[in-house]
Picture 1: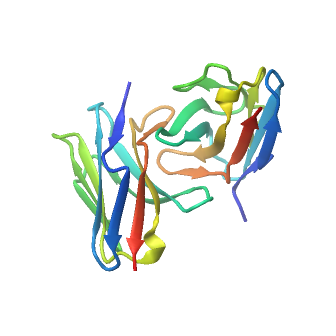
Picture 2: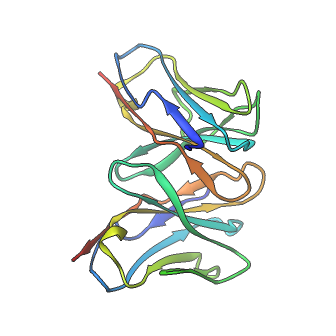
Length: 113
Length: 110
């Protein structure tokens, strides 16, 4: 079955710098790649996604890149702010039938003021 | 207003006891999911459902059962709880793309 590897378990950046979180997946049939944010002690909420028909998507300070050949996708957070500090999860989905996700293990991002 | 709610929010159970975790959604989504979150593993799918009356095994179903009596409600049942099932459990509902998560239930099995 699908496996998703999230390469950075922790990441520290200075406020205003960019943060990059990288994920790889194994199933070439995966076609939908969402990202979720989990603040301390809270639940997960959706931040951005990308579908396999595009290779780049931007929403304000968030950019997602998808390289289907390498089976790799990444989240770029530009001009980081202290409130970006959280755990970020990537996921992959076949986007058919049950639309279930396989999640990466999470990246704890700390933005240092 | 929260669209996915879970109860209880915290639960302490004894080994061998029965535990039922409940989830309710007002999104009118057909699909619902139960995950557990453990450090180093991210979220892992236990059971999911396509709609009322259906339950399917996820990636780690052993030791768990699920029940979907209605569109809105999805329960996770631990018939014989074990300490290895100590975790934080999240319910989610979803359509084709985004999933919406509940607040989570922290379960401790002693």
